[in-house]
Image (cartoon, rainbow, N blue to C red; front, side, top):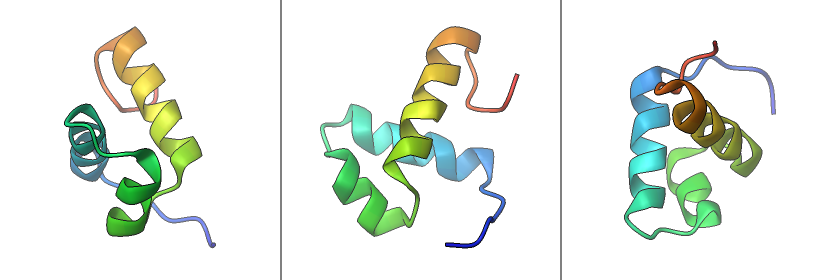
Amino acid sequence: MPYRRISADLKERALYLWDLGWIPSDVMAVLGVSVASMYRWRKNRDKYGTVKKP
């Protein structure tokens, strides 16, 4: 898959669905983001309070 810029809003939505109990592969299928990216966004959110790169 080619590189594409993903908005902070879409990242937040992906994590919101995950927090609601969706499994990452379902979020990936619906929003078209990778599971690895979701883990990275969650790590950033937990550590820095935002999904954006530090």
